[in-house]
Amino acid sequence: MNKLIIGLLMLGTAALSADGAPDKFVRQPKSLESALERLSKKCGDMYAASQHTFINPDTGVLEEKTEVIPVKCKENDDALQHVIRCFEDDKECGYQYVHIQPGEMQNFTITTGSGSITPRTDNSQEMWILNVKNPENPRLRDNYTLVLDNGKPVRNGKIYRVTSIRPDLIKDDVAAMRGRMPVPAVLNTRFVLEGTVDDAIADSCYNVYVADTQSEIGDNSIVACVPVVNKKFRYEADVDRIKAGRIRALFPGDELCSAWIDFKLVPGLTLKMTVHNGWYNIENNYEYNAKIFERSSMADMPGLAAELYGVNINDLEEAKAGLGQKETELRFALEEYRKMLEEIEKRMNADFHTFGNSPSSRKYRMELYRQSQEISQRMKELIDQYSSTIK
Image (cartoon, rainbow, N blue to C red; front, side, top):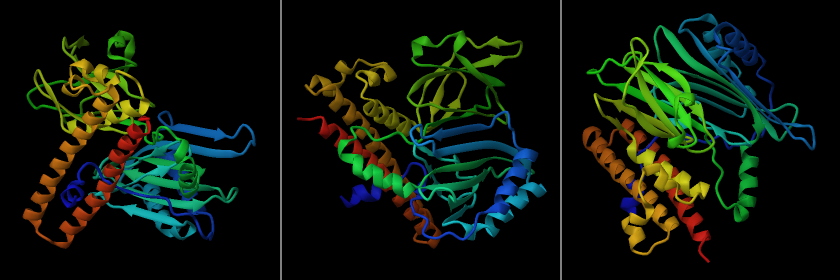
């Protein structure tokens, strides 16, 4: 048991919860609001901005509003520096203030009534967060977030302004409903493809295709053409379920490569892929497989795992042993997590042997341990979900 607990540590970053309820109110962060508005107008890409609003149809009351604005500006731009100062100056307005430095092994999730948002997608990014009590409705809170890459002299990032139900009230509602909720809600719908191109090939851009199933992908399924810059390419999309994806290199003269790479768009996953000459590999393959099986079980879609992996579920060893399809998929999902835990243990041991019991090493392992609790919870939910179907 101790080995299992110690081994529960790899994958991702430790989630820093915003669950604390506001217990006091000082003033509204007017300076920060004004500074964010100025930065949006000066450096924001309003064509790529997104906005979501939900008003309760029965009461006419605003329950959720989300605005996301990509920004790009010089690191010493006065509008950007003013926002950063205002986060610090106005932090006493809120009940929670967080500043995550580049390289810190932790993260932050903005919980909303309809799901959640994870602004920081890479440990090299810097992030500022301020949660404030909403002045109009005590059940709501206002979130102000700025996330930036660590680029020089130009920094890219996003501004998030979110008004939604207080996270502590969401937790109370979920706890009250847990006995009658058949499936946990999906929180993060963001899928990210982080691609790296081998030095041996000269691909300059990729067409991205998306459809409900792999067989439906065709010329009319193209959704983007992403450039390769410094041997890197990136594609992001919000998906509410697993979808089929494909990338295909575009050569000079608009000639399409005869080969392509198929993959799955999985909600809440950053897929890290490296394209070589004639083949490719997925760096976080264990996480990729585990999330696919987890999602297929949550969706309760018979045969989804077979379609995703191109195998006949009846040919699997467990199925031959007489197990049902749901149990077979559960075993495969848990097996993927087990592989992840083995990798975690290797990394933990390597960290200890390299850095010993130094303060920074202890902090790193503690952060991983906190993340391990999330992984353990995922496994427990899968098992509990399966157990609830057994009569």
